Amino acid sequence: MPLQKKPIAWIETVDEAAAEGELRRAYRRAADGAGGEVDHIMKIHSLNPASLIDHLHLYKTLMYGESPLSLVQRELIGVVVSAINRCEY
Image (cartoon, rainbow, N blue to C red; front, side, top):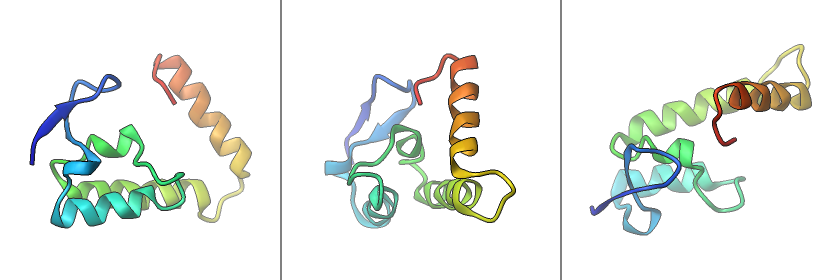
């Protein structure tokens, strides 16, 4: 699989078009409900598809699992943390 660097991360990633096997399946799961594209934060796991699936599960649990926080509050926390870290969100 050819590796490429994305402008958002310095970590080498595998492009969606070049993904095969386990990574292709992981990308499909990550793109489901995300407008059909894999977020950059998920692509940083492209060299380890199992960690991509684990990250996706953690994200869905934190954002959509049972919590006293609303989805809007959770999104706002993400935006604030990203802004503090000067990270695109």
